[in-house]
Length: 157
Image (cartoon, rainbow, N blue to C red; front, side, top):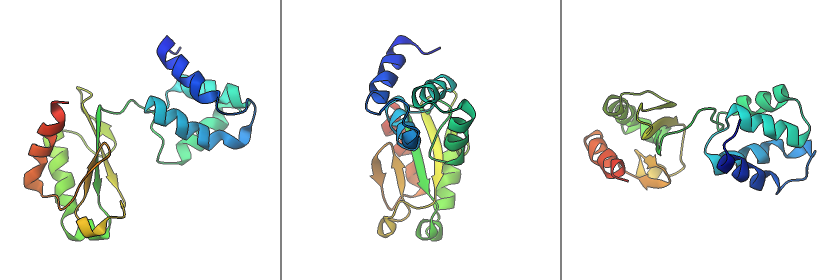
């Protein structure tokens, strides 16, 4: 069961697409996740009904792509690049530092719901390596010694 606010937001997103148009499943999943931040079982059920596809097909497509989340993310999402340039410049150490400071691992959320942590293959800004993105804010030339300071900045908001 969706709460009233979530249902209104979901219906607003779905109304942008033609009911029964199965070809828009991925854009609908993306739009719903953008609006609601993740895909709950109830939202996937509503999407499958709206598009006229089976629930298993909707889950099958959503679970195939790593971009889709099935649990509520933290208030802030920390993404650590571990692509080649970032790896060479110790992105792995930065990831370990975030894991230690937050007490979580890749694709997990802190118990207080404040932060989620994700490892990313590449952001495409290798000249700034190593790179961390918090929400949509890019932090280049990151050092493990700056992790705590960066987290404190976002804890307050």
